[in-house]
Length: 112
Length: 113
View 1 (cartoon, each protein chain N blue to C red):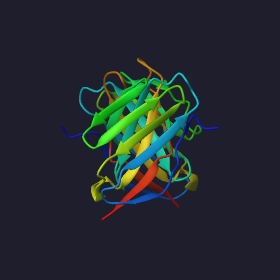
View 2: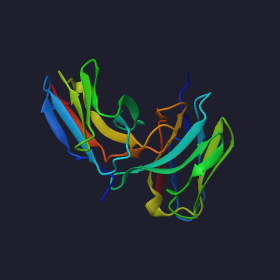
View 3: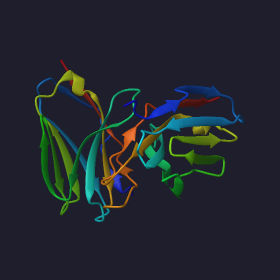
View 4: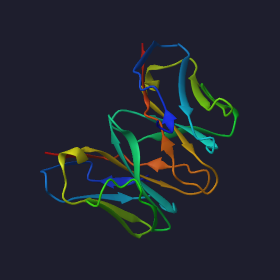
């Protein structure tokens, strides 16, 4: 079993829809949770990160972490065609740790 | 800031040849990471350095792979001899501070025929 599970999709939604992307994980030692966005033929770029459980909002993006369920989510409101990309969740065990563990990535397409 | 720089951007080689990928991290960053990305396996960490010292190379698939970081501004990943199953996109990333906010380069797309 992989440490981090993420549905690879693909996921296709109409413009303006709310998108929900999710990951589950098995190791309770993870403390920092990140979402990366990767456009086609580009390197991943950090979108958001959260520490421990809770929510974090940045514009149209909201990241949620539920450590009791070992489940994290990324919500995109008012989705735009420019949001079309692969979204990867990533986790790290804590301060001082440097080894990110990535999910498989979910390929998202927003249709105009 | 120029970001993480990788070269070459594309490499096509024949099985058995030596391949060298290069990375220049962001100035001031003290950690450097090499990843490999494929459709089947996703993004895999191969090795990472902290202050130019290799910390964890457990992801290096086999002895054909080696990585060096002779100074804070340069790293290489070498595959010798290369095999078709090494075909992938290889990313370099660098970071500074905690939590580990890694900044990725554009990647090198390697094709081994």
